[in-house]
Length: 183
Image (tube, rainbow, N blue to C red):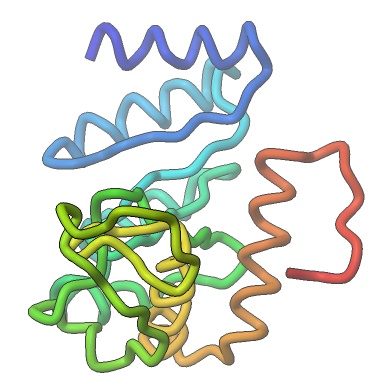
């Protein structure tokens, strides 16, 4: 709790957005985040790899400047997919968390994955090939799979969701740059 609070002071002094992780600490996290907003030390950031409850999501969305990051870990369980239906497009960001948090066959959202790549065992991966990924490792290109699953979970067209996520990322990480032409 002490060091988490210090992160807000650093963000304020650097005027940088925050990339936040809430795992197994939702009540403390939300309490400290709300304190930071009241103190003016938090302006914007992303709750990375969100896999909390609907209640957690609603509490986070009640805080201005909070965006919700979604990756394969966010899409593991049917309950998580149901929670993400409550997420508005103007507060979501796509993530991979590569090399972690890929969408596995055992995940509830896997049935919505349409885009795949040939995958090789890392011991047999001897040279770069843009059509092949390392088996069982999340790669940056897998962000399209997160989009596919999240689009279905939220009931939002993929292009609309991609454009919204791009606009959200620009708003948080590049607020002084004009967005030209969507994603």
